[in-house]
Length: 207
Length: 84
Image 1 (cartoon, chains in turn yellow, blue):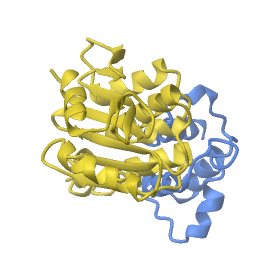
Image 2 (cartoon, chains in turn blue, green):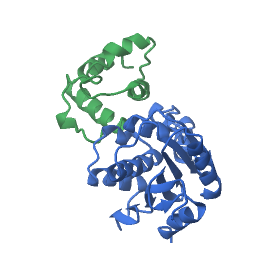
Image 3 (cartoon, helix red, strand yellow):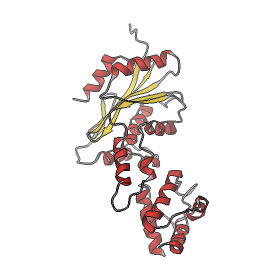
Image 4 (cartoon, helix red, strand yellow):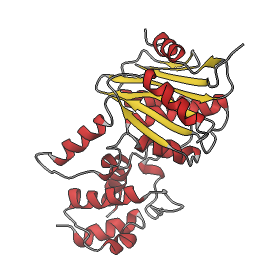
């Protein structure tokens, strides 16, 4: 008998130039393309319709696609679903682009469209707008994916009945590329929400 | 003037990442905000920066922006009248 209270209901992994949902490869390309171009191509191939997507930075684009696929698989995201994300590089790529604009030798001038993405939690804002969420959210910065922290943290949020669902995980988009592992947690499901299971899911697609 | 409107269309599409729009299907009198292109407040800031960066025009009165950024044509008229 499954004694675990909470379960992983769906999960998405985006790495290199591939997207996997619940262990199944949804999209993969061998083409030499930038991450941004790969994500734009994925957006088109997956038939998503949200023109604002093109304005997003790569972190937001990756997170957006992952949550979009989760919503298709697990059903509409409930409005009180909490977002508890983490990564290593924060919004480094946008920060760097913004700095380049500011210190450009010939015409130093900030771009508002770049500046708005110089915080990682903007990605959660984009998700909240898209799925009409009115929920708690937090974005942690860690050295690496840390289920040892996230599992008890998420359990505590659920135990305290702040919400019945959480989308959580690791959304790293930096100079080393994309390493995204996001999952939907709820009461029902087959995969227990434990450190061991999360490590297995994370590393299975990683190797 | 039509050269300027074409140039503006290309710049706006590139600068604002309007990837599902091309120069040919953007009319001179399409409203930039609201039911037209549906630009938002960040796009408005980006247009202000574009005026400064590309044409040396600073919008000193934010209220002025509402009229200037109504359509591609109103932008082009404003640039023609004010560019340095």
